[in-house]
Image (cartoon, rainbow, N blue to C red; front, side):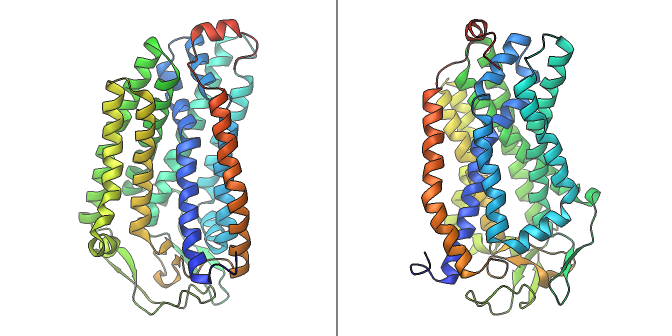
Length: 383
């Protein structure tokens, strides 16, 4: 791909591709996490909870490819971001991994033993594995808008000066609530599409409540960011997009208007938050009309709108620094080499369509409703 794209273009392409991977993770892995979040509340007995689990049981591990690929892409395309973020968010990332540990064990062993206490424990384990990661990822996004306390020395060795508890500030927790709500909305819409009867009705009510919470939280976060005294970041020095990575070779200032600069310059960008809001409201309406597949698509569009809204506001910043603004990592100064980005793009062009193809094929083969009768007929093979 080197002969087709110059270095600045590849930097922009990979900024977009990482965004696509984040959206893919939210849509694909997000709906089974949302189902896990709703599991203890929509399933009133053991059979109903097995129905809930079986809607995502055959797919959840395949959906993890978006999570793994996203992390791998950040590592390869933005090594400085990967190293700095995973140092600063070390305990937060461990909390995500600890929560995710409940998922494979819960899915595989939950129904192996006919003991109510055993099954109840793993039901709540699947809840933790579904609810905690979106919350923490949202908190991380909330901290990006406020800046992360890290700095570089002259050898570009980063030092993180914050704490885990410092990440749990009020604005970040609000963004975490939005993240958790939109994932729950998406999972509820999927669950309503794959079930029927009373279980479907409870899933639709859960998704509707989560969609309303998504709308209110998203609007509240935007107003807080605009009028709550949170300063954004802006580059004031000249930027050479073709330069080799050097995050200290720029001047950065903070101002209350910085995160809104792009929206003021390009009013068409307001379509992005509009998509986030209208998608969630559309999900609520479509669930009321029992158009469950359309509701699932609408919730996916809502999540895409919310994620891209944040990305458009942050651009070109990826990881702003609150303690040394000059050290903030951006699209232009934290990427891998031209060769690395080009080789990765070539691999992506080949393998991403394959991932999309086999994922679509798997969902097509295993489409349809999961019912109580299905669980009784497949007592020893169902999850």
